[in-house]
Length: 231
Ligand code: BTN
Image (cartoon, rainbow, N blue to C red; front, side, top):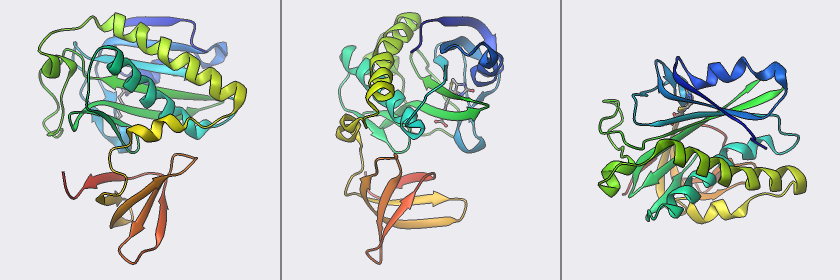
């Protein structure tokens, strides 16, 4: 359970800053107003100017490690709902979309005995990395600015009970399935081994994507980029 938020003005990446605290064996959050070199999944850069929310959760989960990214996505969804946003969905594996545009990205990395779960949320951002064509921010969607620190506290308030439930009861949080955006839809999954077309069949208990490929076979993916073939 996250009991402390350590705030920085600028860091290279909150993911790396969090590593410095691992030896303390305490679950906490590291946030920064800006990152010089924010990291995205699959070696990508997460453009991190002031105006966005950048936080890494340092966690020492006992069970269900693979569910942590899903919990973080669900906590972001719950925050957005509380702030009155609608048309929120989760694009597997860990993107949160607002009106079909990416508003948040999540990366979870294992370091020693810890999981460092990094969340980037576009809050008051007006511009995005040029390669992120399909992005939005809370400001763009709502037409007003938000208090980033208040959103951060709210996020921790949503994450903690989900995390406690998972750790104490070991249950899978099925609620997340309500928000998955592409069940039944035609997609292609891009992995380092190639591109596979099919339709999304389900999300498994371990957060893997189940795809029915063009031959009808169900295939399981733990990583990859999902591109919708029909929006
Ligand atoms: C993605 O969509 O590729 C994941 C993006 C994750 C970005 C966050 S911002 C806070 C934390 N620090 C980083 O360097 N990356 C994550």
